[in-house]
Length: 467
Image (cartoon, rainbow, N blue to C red; front, side, top):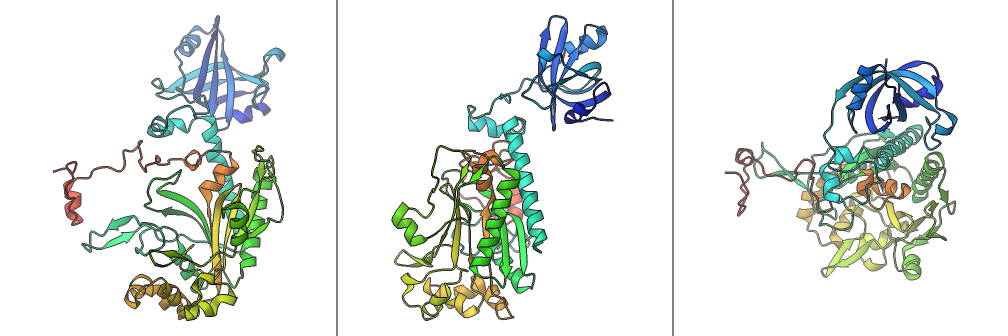
């Protein structure tokens, strides 16, 4: 029966069977040492000159071969203890060895932090890149963060619900990824930029408290460390005011840091709050970095930015600053309905900022048809366009829609900041490159002409299209 590496600290003088990868191999005279790695840690194993067959087999071992090792757990000599690892006081005195699978020489090094290796190589061989300790740790802490979030929200009576990936294309601030319909030629689904409309419809459905760790898709131009697909913590609550949403999220963030990142220090609790106007006047940004010591990587300065303008000028007209489903602050509702003093309308929106980065944003929503219609009127939408794009929302709001509000965290960004990583690609298992490519799978790629024919699609002026 297999024993994990971490378990051997309680098995002195016991015989064990381990399985994993050869991390390193060293010859010391007639002794052969290997470091064996599995998901739980690393342990040293020693092969003596006899039995000769076992020694000869161990002599063949190379880095990253997959093996099964049998042996006895023993204490290392005092001067050979490795205090850097949990199992450093012990070693395995090898008694049996099976080579399960060999490995060719790796095309990239995995025994370093990886920052010195070009992105193209790391992305092409991502399944090897993930073996390095730093990335392995990032992926595991990500799983712990998601579990804590699920446990916390479930205890608060939130219901985790998956929303559709194939939806309708609507103007929500970014370019959609479109999916052609084979059964309805010339018509398209859109991948969700966010579950915004679905989560509001869940409030109409009487769910009251929803959350989802959601995949989102935005076809945006290359910039910084954006990804074409990313992950949000998405949540929505009925019968709440702004304060309810902000306080619950603040409680969750504090719990997350204290339980999973005890080495980190939150600079100020409760989180400070700044109006958009004050933030811009004082810091010239709506994402201020409030750290008192910016050289301290373990210092976390959270803050809320509130009271955003609802609308901003765009191409001679008006567009929303966050999303069109936000509600104005109560004192501005008449301005919205009358479509006057538009530049003065403040929205019930709130952003959560960490060390100069926006990690989440949300708002109290419009839940009455006339208020949502007014938003689109201000943006210059015709009645026909409003009905075409958002008629389903307006219809739903006619049937007893509760007041509601929510927020979405950029989960990749939050984890990257907590792990002191320079970009979100370091905390995503299989990210795209900066220009949206998947070098490992070779995507985006050409497709067979027959596939295009089935979808009634013709690629124009593209010599790469297969004939």
